[in-house]
Amino acid sequence: MPIFEYRCKNCDHPFEILVRSSAQADVACPACRSEEVTRLLSTFASRSGGPSQMSSPSPRPVTSGGCGPSCGCH
Image 1: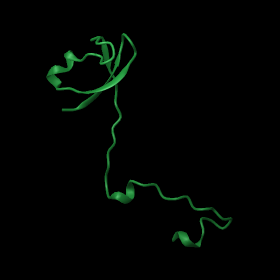
Image 2: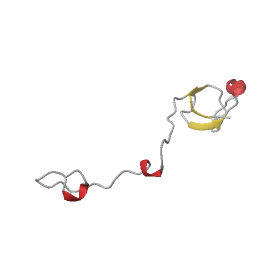
Image 3: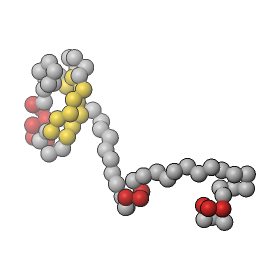
Image 4: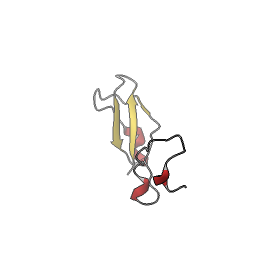
């Protein structure tokens, strides 16, 4: 079952809930129990490649001659 994000039209409370596609009409706000809710567009995380692509490289100081002799491009 996917997790959907909603915002209540009555009290403006944002919430997430596991919802079966057949039960999407039965969603109620957990704060005020209103069924007047809007499903929000959600972002998602994806990963491709190995763990080295998950972290960003540490910044290297730039010298006047380019990126420096230890970068491997010289």
